[in-house]
Length: 385
Image 1 (cartoon, rainbow, N blue to C red):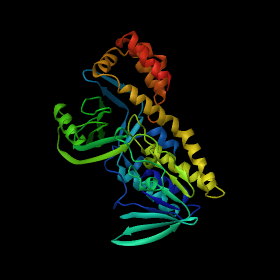
Image 2: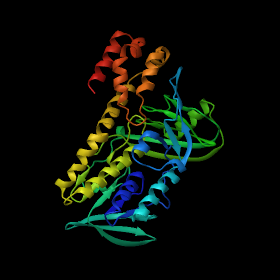
Image 3: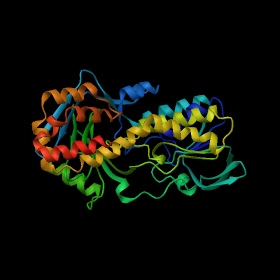
Image 4: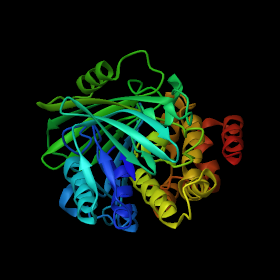
């Protein structure tokens, strides 16, 4: 088995497979861990997946404040619902588990070409300036947004502009307890954030379809909101929104961000990535052969487990960002205590379809400030999801 990409999806898959198969993993970067990721992960999901995360925790999140143009709403929970992790430490833990199980992880190694040779794969690697060739029965694409594996094998098309989140993040010296989320015009069709990360804060934004670069937009947002502090690091990233055409073929599976397994409402991909990596390993361990028919079970499993959540997130996000800034202000201003408590009662950090239940149940109170016609329009669209 050979896995291209040592992010959470690839490493989780490797850790599950290595006890039964010989597993190699190629990672083009020198070290594990995506430093451009904010690293906010739901505690319940981490525990459900059996991930040992506590040594990588920088902060625990139990409160968040959402900001519209002129209003804000605060949500506080009795205990933490999420953690902010050091991604190098978090991914390192997944890597150590994979190594302990017997996997081989090749860092500073880029896959330059893959091709089929009968029932096997020929994989050419660039390591230390030299080309090496390895062979494998099964290839697993965990190679992220640009996934050359999925593209070269005809499983996806190039991402369209409206399927791409362009993001930028600063790490700054600051002290904060609350997580702040800003629905601002600087983050077109998405949001900006300030998240406590130990003795630092991560401040960033993502945009979709914006004309201003995310870096320029973030600098303007930070200046306008008085968040300016000493910048310790800054990074940019791109995130796909939407699932690729097909996630399996003969001797081939695609996992994680490479497949588009991202939460559309928040842009997070770690939990769904790990989930898909574990599902891929389950299918491979149970398969009588690695034919396309046998591996099609993988697509059925992820659709059942995370597919509905992703599709809900795509539709809900489109509807949410159809609200004008003035409409969102009015909703924030008139949202009553009972609706807020219902959101908290049903809250899930990673399973966002809970919002549908809450909004349909309390739709009148949530949208009443928008008037009867607009409320009916929005509720009608929600019922179609």
